[in-house]
Image (cartoon, rainbow, N blue to C red; front, top):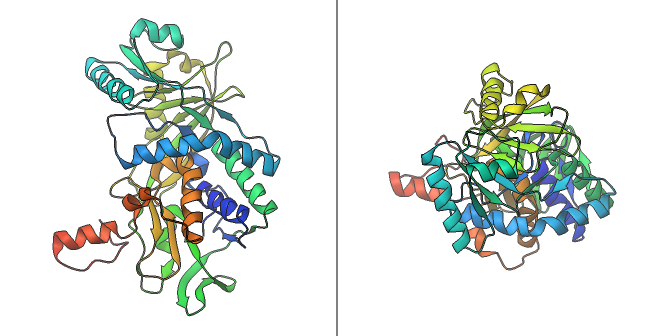
Length: 378
């Protein structure tokens, strides 16, 4: 259930392994959070935040070369993909000190990186502002076209026998002795296993006991520009206020806002101007860029910013693959493998311990001494 990059990646992997798979999507494949993703593959940005998320991102990044090659080969589609590296910039002494700590930590972890001063940063990326105080370069980072990748995953999955139903609204999930009955606006369907990958819309699906994971929508606005004539950016640029991703066709993506506004998918003047002001601070040439469009997506956030991947404790045969927040594209290949292994009863990966659906319920119970239902307001 769910036709974003996570749902399509899981469907492709399950189909590739020989299972009969149906994908149910409420509006259109790739039209949720995926459409507003810049497709950054950068698990070591803000590297001082070590922990499960960085381990997940690192593992998934290692899979990406083969993942894209396989999907392109199976689909016949072209997918923009470039490991061009990132340059994370500092415009003040406080941010520069943070980058110095990040460089030290990444080096100790064996991750290739390079800390440079302001003038060397400008030499490496001439479009940078002369006011940049320094920068951290990570060559293994890059980006992938989120929408083209999702479309290719759909085509590749279909060639492995996966069927897609869209638009298809799921009203309710009802466990039965034979599996799970998925009740849709066009009737009921019986499945052995249901993978819930509906992102911010997980709570809109009614499981029989009302149990759903704690996921809430976080709006992200993304601006697409046509870069001015002349030399283009060579790397993904990241600052404290935005990121800027150069595409091979000469367009540039600037993202992304983080807004707690519920299910409001409207673009705003404040969101767009805030992104452009932040981009102009580190890349003055962007003032001459031509505005193309703004995209909006609702990213599925969780209380600890970690995905929810694993079996439901309340609904038999219901498996969650959701809550990827800003990392859905990065974590798609790893999530697909983890979910397929669970469905096929492979030995669970230790990484799943930190992603278990019941972790919020357990934490709330410990704090309040009362029983809580996953999916309640945090």
